[in-house]
Image (cartoon, rainbow, N blue to C red; front, side, top):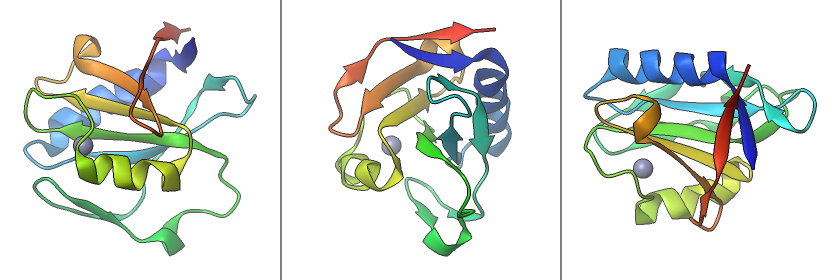
Length: 121
Ligand SMILES: [Zn+2]
């Protein structure tokens, strides 16, 4: 079971709403190796359906556990492009679909298999 801190989830929801209809993208980290408790907003080129990340902009000391991005539509399954990029950004990948709430978040592994997760305080 993947554990994610409530403040990380809340930040993802707020940021996804703010940047809509563009795609929000960030990296996830864990300070204790178990709970996802860090979110890093990577300077990126936001676009409709594409978010290009410049790899050199990711801090070298950041412990990347995975990634999160928003889908401006209601589908929250990984696209072919998502499955291609997931392995480059760690093991755990969140997708939050419109209208951006805790019920539209799904978590996947790098191969696109859905994982169980829960919010922790
Ligand atoms: Zn996607």
